[in-house]
Image (tube, rainbow, N blue to C red; front, side, top):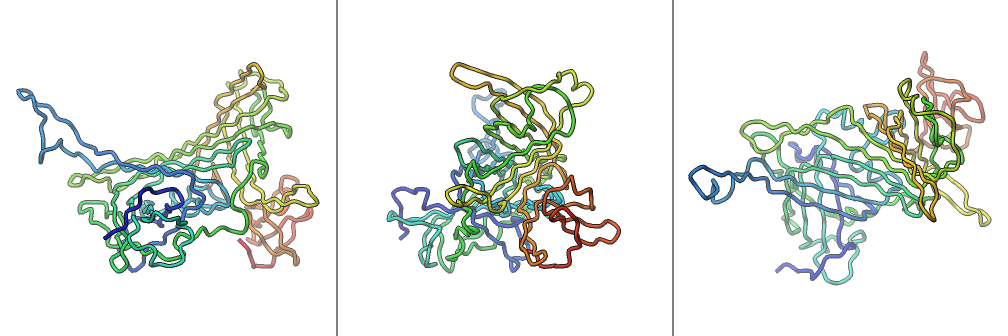
Length: 434
């Protein structure tokens, strides 16, 4: 007899996401499941897509098997919000973490479908239990498994504001949802289908171990504080006037990035399932900044007829420590780069007992190489010293335009150089720490 919990609270729930594609023909290859960490909220559900058909001469609906005709598979949607940190979740859902390419590179380059499986694991006990620290595999017996198959990523967003930890949110659109108990020796199969004419159900089984739901935190960077980040705005073009976002004294209160990943559903006669959901390129994303007005710069909006205002936005998240009671930066945990963001709206507002605030929105395109990048800087050994590489250059550009510790490549020879202490030096050590 299965145990029944009186209620299921958040510490009893774990979330797994597999690598793509969701359905694998070669079962022996197996799916790799990653635990999503620091999850704050999860919403999932489905909509039964049926059509109510009326008919002249009848006061009843046209039915099939006693119900309105089902014209296609149910729409299954999943939204997951988590505390943004070292980038583990971004890697797990398939985003590309590299300074030379956009975060969507893997989705654009993939030769197979980019759908995944999401498994929601819930404990079945009333006694206290932390599913992230299960020490015996037998404890998973009779756990509830909510499987979501063929989940395509449809949105990624990032939000940071004064007084709160930064968060990220991902949304998926899936094709199937199933519910199973977890039984050793008869583990539940994944919820994915072989999308197409036969829509065969996956025979691959979900097997849980004591490491499956391990948090897997890297070092001590479990969460980032608002004070652990630097935001740098660089103007590339334009002279609209007003508030200089690129000012070093800019009092930014909040910043958000929203990446809607539009997809085209592809159907075929003979199947109620979309057998693929292709990206609609280029992806058009938005960024929003809210800041306290501290100064103005000369210019006017008429300049938009000549040249729009274009900016690059860099967000650096730091690992910090206290030295003699003073908070200092240690290493960069990761970097978010928004490239060629075009200013679309700028709104000023002030009220009693409040500051003059400006809210601005920007749009930018995301392709294979540019638009939006998220990455953790490299660590390399150079001249016996471990240094953190902040950026890369495809050619040895002028040093004054570079950050300290930049890797560069000589175009003629392909040799690797490092810019350190104000000069380029040939780098001969191939040992990287990533």
